[in-house]
Length: 145
Image 1 (cartoon, rainbow, N blue to C red):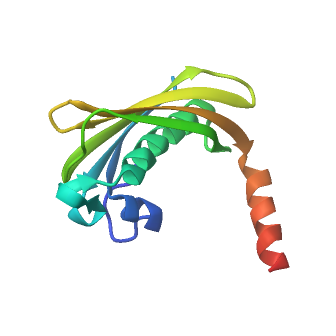
Image 2 (image 1 turned 45 degrees about the vertical axis):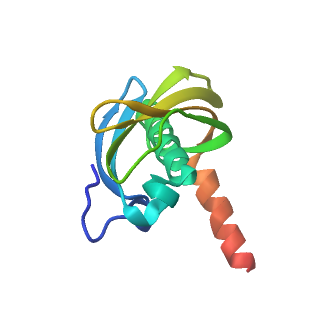
């Protein structure tokens, strides 16, 4: 599982991923992030887009754990409720399947601080797209530019 190595995927690095703690075939995933000061706005509060991204990534990883790497999870709908501010330091994002479907599935997730306090919760409707079709479409778009 990815860790914070220099050759880490640029998106993971930007988001502050420390490591993927677990991906369970039952449709659960846990990811650990380091919230950094440069991700904060006034008063040292992590900007909500990072919090949303961390929860979204945990739900996407749960979808991959459930369906396999031939699936690209694509958010159709995403809602996040914020309960407490995230601050610089270690945070844990967890995602899990709530209801599985063939083409779409419903996931939930939350973000906790190092003490286990839930800072935010999210729900997502995810399209379970075929990876080969997504990649072929991406290549066609690049070729036309």
